Length: 371
Image (tube, rainbow, N blue to C red; front, side, top):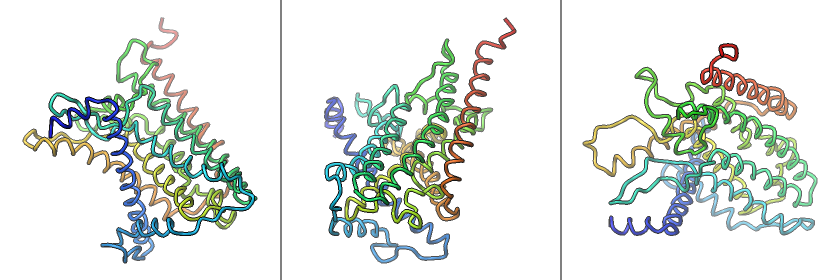
């Protein structure tokens, strides 16, 4: 068995194929569980039972809903731009899968003489890749609203574009201090040049501060984390920022004219993005797969699985925050949404970036007048 694994991962193409299939399967399972967990948690917060009939504790209800949508009639509007209309749900789904490929979910594992990284690919521009892939979701929503040939989806697509662009800017600015702080941890000769490799950022969060506080970036970059999480909730179109799907105002938003499985693809992409954004926050601010050290008496396979368990546990804690917000906060008005993005988050992220840059430069080179 060990020799077979070595032969597979020694071949670049086979290793890439195995990792892509594994990521695809993991994300599908996570989405099925996440939808069930959300329905159960929201039901519990509202003193209801939630799904109960399909499977034990209703855990198969998501599969039943997916099968129902798959078998439903798929209606295509008469005035739709057919090519773009059909492509929009796929365009929403593909970036959601591609984002997770660069996120390390566990410590590299050595099998025989082969080291297997538990990451689809380790890019040296991983942070930029995440921002680029997340911004592609805007095109899917715009194309879906425009290609439907109806006024309501068009209005929903325009509204979604303005929302996602405004919060994308705040999210990108919030991640710049992470790169700068990684350079401080690297201790290079040029302190303002850091690393954008996600695996290296996770490794830089090892150790402890004064012996008892983990070396996670969130303890030094709390403003970046807060701004990132607010922007992430808006990017994922989750409450209280779910004006893209404001039924009372826009019927159903950009996906009004979609039905059947194409309708399901948009919501599959939404839950994937929610999981991806939580995983990104864990990777950049909470040490990724890093966890408590255990004695070496544990079997090797348990030691290899523990980092994955820590990563998923941290991610689901942040997912609980997404669900909690949905169950407790009312939806914002659109003017409040845009004011928060342009007049609060972007100025706050710029001010924090300037302050952090000045402090970093001061620590690296001293005060300007000292020389």
